[in-house]
Length: 636
Image 1 (spheres, rainbow, N blue to C red):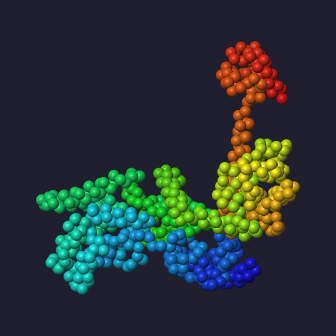
Image 2 (cartoon, rainbow, N blue to C red):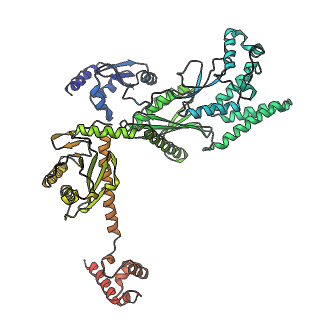
């Protein structure tokens, strides 16, 4: 820690000499590894926030403990800084930056535009110059099925066709023959199988010229961008021309393509009456992992949805998480819409929107919908992100790994003899001393064990809230010898957690000492999430984002939820309780008779004994008891 403090003091002096111009900065650890890359409008002011710890993001104190040096690059504008930031993150993959959880290459659909006869292909390759990429897709099967469907609608060569590769080699050797390529290829290559079944345009046998083929390529690219109406209009016009020329065979082929497009539109849910083009990005976060789901809407229809697992979660701010994803996602795709909908407003929204607008060639708007159809769809995207993240966690065993890490970290941080396989936590809930209750929740193997949950009504008379007295009572009842031997209360806990700081922990320790029990204890304060232990005046600070802090907060929050639910239940029951409930001889049936006859307690109170006794089913002695109880209450 002393070394970290000395290093931070040295960094303060270095930051004072940094220029005030826009640029990017790179924080490095002792080995020179880049751990974080950021951009700034004013480099000196931004770096100063880090070294003085005035940046309020949770990860900053932890990050600055490992930082030993930094570099920076000055650029001309914020926009240039954003572009450079993305390149640096892609180069270094810093630990503290938001990135995809799986650093794998995602599937794309690509068109080899630099070829004389461009082909379509499924690929995971790094983007090459002269090739246009559509995606990314997170479902490889969906990408392949899209190519298969598309080639049924618009015949186009595929890059893995042997005959197409042969044509490409011939044209590369004789590039001056490109204008008459179809004539040159007649007889030089044989027709491929796809041409015979209607999926290939016949490049290999000279059945199509470059002009007509270019029209096919444009239609394919329009389809992949979601521009269905443009394709429909063009195919309809071509069909009419073919019919007018009495070329009924070609008109029939075009009609089949139009019917295929109509069938696709039936499967799509039309969500907007207008031809809007937008991406709606929903997020769901766990403690150190999250998922982003992108609904790609083109011409008012959902073209596809894709999900990405991210390596940061609640350990970074919501705006930082979303901005990091937006920059990473749109850096790798050429399909940029006119509007991007997010659930937060980005701090650098104007800069990001400018960067996207330049990439797209038209204005791009970042929007935070508050109501209406866009808000509903954004919530739907977030729900899909949640399901995708749950599937990922189950598939990879992420939750089990995190739980094991949490138990081992707690063992080390709290100096326990073994991982705390059974954790019990208590919380008190009261309203100025009234309806005071306590909850006991149990986590077994790091998971809630709801069959072991217990709740207690505090029996000690209280005139005001007193958590210390209440906690002592409930611990005395829970850990009394008869309860410790009761199988219904389970085993002796490996760790006892109390909600509160040092005073609450001391009260718990004193009660356990009176019972002669030695159970490891800790207290968790709500304010700074500090863990108090009996053997040290200084609280233990579990690292932000660590599995152990997440688990112990989950235990504390669950005990609070369980206690306050019981407290509200008692309070609501007391508010709806009637004075008639305490009258001897009045049960639910007679209570209903009285309320049906008089309608309210006020009118019942105004009636005399004879009037009450006149009700069938109400004896005279019961009527007297009712009249007496109501008038005694009125005299209080």
